[in-house]
Structure formats: C-alpha cells, structure tokens
Image (tube, rainbow, N blue to C red):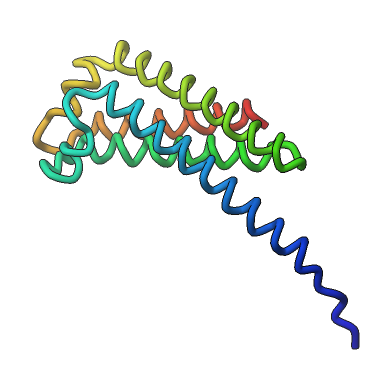
Length: 147
C-alpha cells in the first residue's frame, strides 16, 4: 500500500498562502465594517455592543454576511498565482465594498422613513429585517458579478 510522497515545500507555501488570503479577506471585511459605520448615525460598534440596539445589530449581521459572500467569491475566483491572486482578491473585494456602500446609500434613499431612523429605533423593526435581506441579496448579486 502506497501513500504517496509528502512535499513540505508545497505544504509551507500553502500555509503562507492561506495566511495571506486570510489577512486580505479580514482587511476587506474590516474596511466594510468601517464603511457601514460611516453610513450609519453614531458609532455602529457602540450601538451594537454597548447600547444593544436590535435594528443596528440586524443591519450589521446582514452587512457582514453580504460582505462575506463578496470577499469569499473574490478569493475563490482570484488568479492561481499567489501574488496576482492576492491583488485580485483585494481589488475585487474593495470594488465589492464600494458597490455595497453604494447599494446601502440607495436603500437609505428609497426606504420609507430612511435607514438611519430604523437603526435608531429602540425596538426591533421588521424594516431592519427587510434591509438585511436586501443587503444579502445585493451581496449575492455582487459576488456573482465577481465570478
């Protein structure tokens, strides 16, 4: 019975690539959070983790899941060459964040009562769930456009 050979060089390169793609992906997600924070009234981090506003939390969840679809697709569809793949992932991830921010601005303009008012409501609003679902749909379309 043969198990084949083990190439420690390939394994090491794979580990380095994994870490680098993770850093690029996490960086794009962090930037996405900062963009969302700039587009919402007040500090989103404070609204979610300190004030525990349910609508801000729903918006954050929808945004994170949507951006995760975008970033994962950017990584999965990037070049097989490590350097080019990292650049592809970063550039397309950033384009995805920009398109996502634009879509969020459009949602803010067309949602009756404006998104900012929904985020600040002290009780959970069905509108927050609708916006989160819209963000997920936008993220899926955005991810498909990247592939």
